[in-house]
Length: 151
Image 1 (cartoon, rainbow, N blue to C red):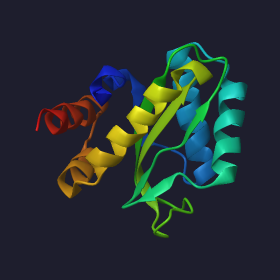
Image 2 (tube, one colour; image 1 turned 90 degrees about the horizontal axis):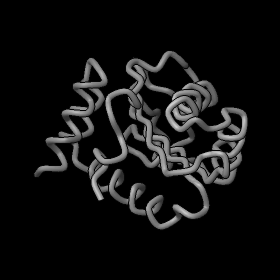
Image 3 (cartoon, one colour; image 1 turned 30 degrees about the vertical axis):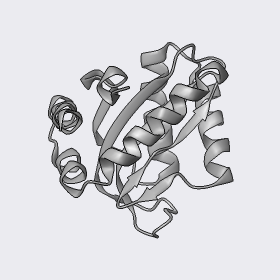
Image 4 (spheres, rainbow, N blue to C red; image 1 turned 120 degrees about the vertical axis):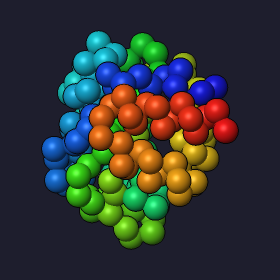
């Protein structure tokens, strides 16, 4: 599975306008709801509940908020970049600028885990992380992913 099969430029928010964790989650949930024809309040509640269990700030300035939600029929991935670092209770204590949000129904659990794993592998590479953070547009962000997945 490739992330570029799930993520398109219209699913990337650059720049994210929110300046705190809850605001970023809400902003990404709104884009996800719009792309998935899902129920925004339900998606937001599911992601917030999951985030309340354990922060999805995975380190190195990256967070991957995710949840399962019945109003989303298929697995959906959105991404975003914040202009300035956002405190996110990350495992390394560092703030976050690079965000991926994954939401899908219970039936997509396997694909959900594969997407999480794929993102984690890609963002381990400093050059990929920096390229995504430096992307000035959704198209540039998408192109960095295309190149990273081709390597």
